[in-house]
Image (cartoon, helix red, strand yellow):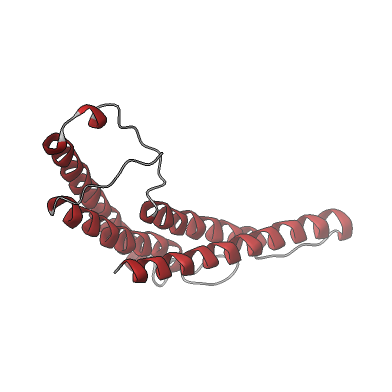
Length: 160
């Protein structure tokens, strides 16, 4: 399972790098064309915004997998193993619930906007909301894995 998740994260990191490169090329190219040649790339602003949203959600999945999100353990570090386990189960359960809400809301928005076309590219606006769906499914898998590990007594070690 770890190998599969690591491979998935590598794929996401590559996708993020491609999205970032495309954003830079679109925005920089648009600036040069506007100020240098009095023209521009019509789809630049719309695609850059969509790429940024996708990059943010995919990056959040990678950060969740690597446990890189900001956090504080002032209280949890002072608890014993049982208290620590109870706090982890509570937080992982709450995160799963929020992930479910995000999934349900993003899926509803994708369905509502399935036939709505973006003004410049003409792409379905559902693709924009698809980032939330992909994030929620990916995060749910990672959170469930963490919850199962916690319930089995395999508490995560503190990062230096």
